[in-house]
Length: 504
Image (cartoon, rainbow, N blue to C red; front, side, top):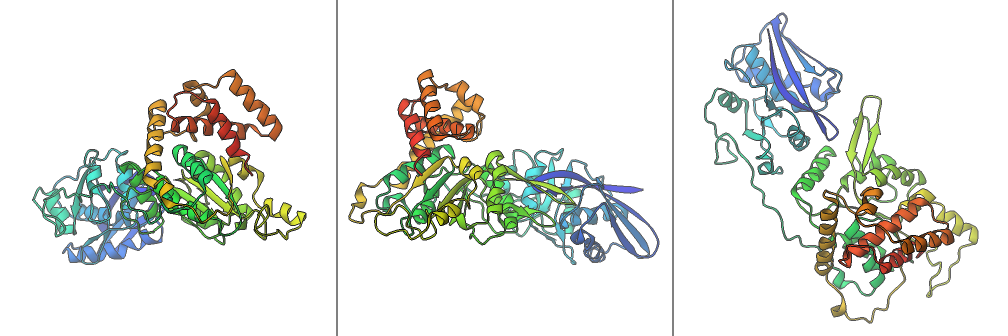
């Protein structure tokens, strides 16, 4: 006879149902795990056998065979420990009731029978909502807002294997972590007021740059800033998250799940992530990868900002690998053992000097670079990457004798950004912004006039713009119109969009 217990496996952010099949027969005491287990899953046999002895389950002279089905998927991590223990207990007759097939078990088991949390529980929880699972028995993790899943799935929080047995047999159990029995949910309220250390009101000058960043935030457009050292490129980029709308709870859970898969600590927050990798970072750390592919910086910046300071100092290979994620909002990593797709929808902000010495075009210091050096420096960022940048912005040093009181605060700008995002959500009836909505849908909802099309075509011929750049100008103009609370394209918005794309 074989006992079957459900669990959840992960392939990146995608989860799938795993049937943990247990067969026990008389033989030398041993435990065999099949079904493409990795090293951490194979090591589960020592944990499981020790936990069974602690639970006084006699497996002397018994051979335990564990099959993790479907067998063609690579099984990674100790997610299946608890399911293996419950399956053996059922097979040996220590659990007499039937185990429901709509109930899944996840968690790592200690030698004394305690159930521990692991990285990957949150992605498994998110995946469970799409699987034929009604109940999930799992350990407590203070980082996870269990209350957000109560409308989709019932989370049964347990501390040890004894509690699991008691629950399956219909007995009421309590945990040391909460006062409520059986179904225990950690209540985490939404952080409605996020305090940022930097505010646009404190930044002197850069009126054009602030306007460009507001447009970028409203439509999720990518932006490339060039300027001499010390002109404020990094300061503006670090202040940019303060004008971004807060994440919805669903998006915040996606971000938190990606951080768990990358084994980085991140509390539940509605603040958009901000990633600033050094230019010496490898391509794998930026894009993601490894033998068991983990999320890279572009995935950790999902729903937030990826700031590449000294963009021209990144290797050309690394920058060119950003092409697909910038277009699709996701990255697919293929390895011999598996192919994994991670979400990577982010706003890219690049910053670079105009030349190797940094002072090309500066009015305060003479550039010492030769024409050949200038050409080589600009070619470090390939044409396809330039084409994928929506806004090209040139910064110059500002006059420090200006009054702070005349500056707008980040909150004032953020309110306009939120209003523009709401217009886009209502117009497109979904989670789209002007930067990622299909062009045909954008033009169906708000078409350009013939005069506007002629103006754009004329400018494109003058500037030798490709179709991709023309499309980006249309998207920019739509965002500028949204900020002006206009339901149609305005001539002023198209003119401003053209200027933002030809600043360099």
